[in-house]
Length: 180
Image (cartoon, rainbow, N blue to C red; front, side, top):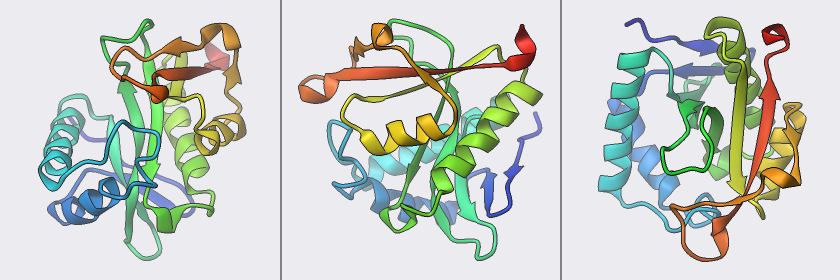
């Protein structure tokens, strides 16, 4: 399958490279980047996730893309679309992102999110795309709002894959305007 590469004015969403593993691992070891996850990730976990992302992109042509700044080629994180985990109390495809702290505050997550939504609706023909985060993750929730996603408190849920205070989660939705 051909792997889709997405481009925006400032970003490239692409297949993962070996050179991405080290900055990805450093990012996932940062407690602030992983603030709304149960724990930081070690090098082996991060490297394993890159291999899984590569395989999913090769199999489907879409998934969690590596994210780089187009002008410099700097790796800044990931963004993409992925089927919701089986353990969740709902199904569908979710949009997501995770950026290195140095990339925060530049609008990159919103820009990448728009590219993913456009791809999901325009190319994949998805009827709806979801976004999930811990209830207290106000930065990600602000991105979801800027993406035009809707929030209904009735969709709040407890993430069955997480124990502790991060378990309480929120669900945002975006409907494909062409899906009727």
